[in-house]
Image 1 (cartoon, rainbow, N blue to C red):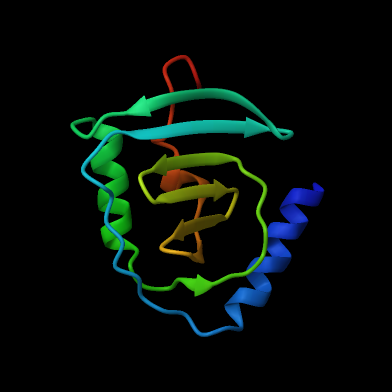
Image 2: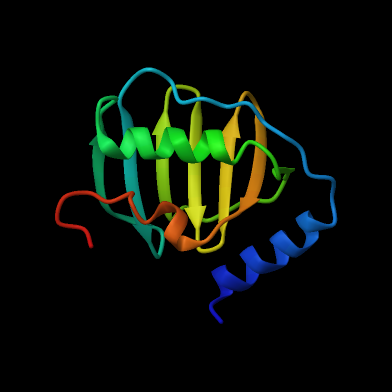
Length: 123
C-alpha cells in the first residue's frame, strides 16, 4: 500500500469515529478548473464549463452526498482536484476532501463516483 493510500485510509478511519454532518454546498455558477496531480506534479489540467456534462454530474453528486461529511484538520496530497471560486474539492482514492468557507470536510467515496472527471486525452 502506498504511503498516500495509507495516510488517506488512516485519516478516514479516524474521521469515521467522529460525528458526520450534512453540508449544503453548491457549485458556483462559473467555470471550474480540473487538475490531475501525480507525485506532487500537475500532469494535466483543463476547464469545466458550467454547461458541460461534467459540471452537471459533479453538481448532482454534491446534491446526492450532502450527508456523511466529517470535519477534518488533516492535510491531503492533491490528486483529482476541482477548483472554483472559494472552494476546492480533492478526490483521493476513497476520499473526497472539500475546502470552502474556511472549513475542510471529508467524505468516503469510490473512484467510480468521480470517474467522469476527465480532461480531453486523459483516460
